[in-house]
Image (cartoon, rainbow, N blue to C red; front, side, top):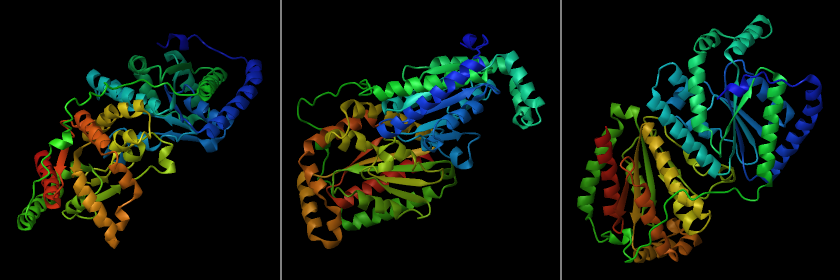
Length: 491
């Protein structure tokens, strides 16, 4: 895979002097057009062998273009905060917004490759990491991100020469460490595993470009021209082509929707409710203080019909927890900052550390609910969201999270009664909006959307619990009991 990057590519001084000013001006213009266009972000991944000019090239790009609109991030060993979350959490946080360029050193490729080289992982684990990367980059691409991946290569002989040159210069000696020479000893294995990883992850939507790093002028012009060509091409495209990535939805032939099968007549008397609530809240409190929970986290997702009682159920959960231990995230329409990022970005930001609880009042399922029903996004976008959400939740669980998902359901008649009560009650009036009334007109559309999301995202590791919430006491108790039982089972 690296043969063409070991032939000795060079660019003469005169050629570089002629090409560099034109390329620099063109890149500045393309960057300006990108910021004005604002429809996509550009993400540049930098990888390769030590001494191949990765840092010099990125510094040059920042010199050629406006560094105010370039976000350069270098990743080393994860911090304690990062180790207590899924592996991809730290990468999600630094994604560039639409209209800007992001440059990433030490990307999501570094750990899988290095771990395999030093024997910390095996081929199966490397393969799993590659699959995770492919899913991640596919999602970014589908969300409009322009991904460019550059691998800077040197032959073994050229790398040794380069390290010796840097080390012999008093001004640059600090750049070569003992670790660099230790890595040089395993060059062959590193090269073999890197080549395998690049082959498996070079896709149409996120291709790798291998750049010979021995000649600074050659590598600079090569990277600059490839970046310019990709940005110009994307800027001239009217739409970003998208593929359907999920099976078509099956129509309901007998009009029997999932939510209509629930028994909404179930009730609890106040005395029984109070007694059982105290029991399950006590169990939940004990579980949250269990030593084993220090190595886990709890994520609770609440969706449901408007006025179904999500807030009341959440308060019964928080009533059993230490206020220092949990965070409640109310989810509304995305902010201007959130709209310029992939839709899961705003949820990744709130992934809890180990030993913590995060409660979402409305969730990432808005993509396949309100955005689907109200046509806020294209069909292919919400269709692919099912698999993206499953992948997201799988990563959360791999990172130690326990996930409980609740859909609270009431009848249309009960909803109308609660709406009218809210309008008449001064301290509840803020809860009712024009949007709530509009949503009632699309009741059957939401029923179909809920059935599809349960069918496609209720998994063994993150199952949905459908809550009959016509009677508030019954619904609240079912939620608290479900969380307490789940924690007891997991711990």
